[in-house]
Length: 212
Image (cartoon, rainbow, N blue to C red; front, side, top):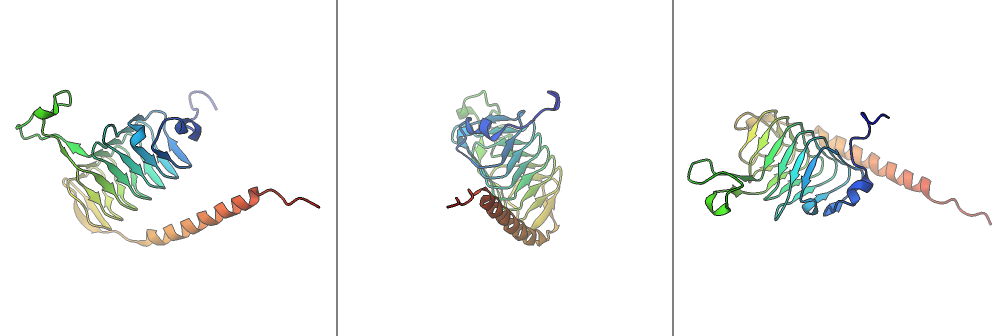
């Protein structure tokens, strides 16, 4: 492998020394990511964060990743009020999650270099429940929960919480139709297969019994 096309993600050994709140196994984070507040970020198993993402969880903020999470390239997670990803949730390319927002009405100033007493920043946690998928280029605003199975179409603006197992799209995002639940059957098969593979691997690594 050449230097030009060499490894693009940190190894687990690299990540183990970066002070994450917790870190599972099989975690891959691209070397081009910007991460602020690693001590407030917990990561489960089988998580991949692709190139040029920005994760900010400084101060009282936090990001919690469950397991089997994918964050596509060029995503922005501003987690001053907290962002939670439950298992099997994912973001496509260029999704922006804002857990805080300025007041654009003109009653306040809108600039992070200005003391907070002059700004009208409001916010609230963002939660992506199991099997949520957010399409490319979409924006999710503060105080939003995407309930289990929600799918958000590309280039959508999510301003309020969305009910489970719906497909939503538009500015602002509106319900288009219901989403099928067949993936839950696939999840069950997948987890059973994964568990079997782990048990087989563990058995194969056990030391052979000594001959007497």
